[in-house]
Length: 193
Image (cartoon, rainbow, N blue to C red; front, top):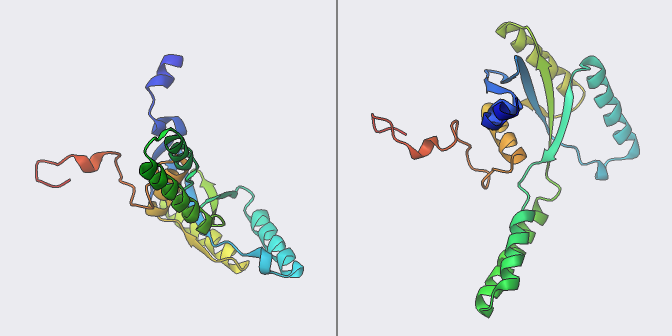
């Protein structure tokens, strides 16, 4: 059993099978993703915050299997900053050390601009449904979330890829995530990549 785990890919370990028309197939069930625009509760009155809590409670009551995910909407630069700091500490040439310090300051600036950027995702598992039933369920959930006053949209494949890339710390400046890792480096017989 232990030997088998070593040979499994990350895709196999997390149970990811494929993208579907409406989400992701994971371990024989489909996950539907809904991106919800965050509300700035720091500028809302206590009454409006209470109303948002009640609205969220209504959604979770209507769909008890709905899961919530809150992630940074942007990459974290902490490991890069640590690496740059270590390089600067070891650097003997003052101009190179100063450039490393400027790089670190730039990363601080970039991170501070996006420090409060959060992404809220609602995830709903569907099991044993035909594609038209999945479509109807996705529409019903999206409408219920919107009816409670939240700005919502169904996540597309690009959104889901970006979330996975950020989760696995592989996002590269928000660039497009390829369907096959490294596939862009190989040319097919027809000259296409």
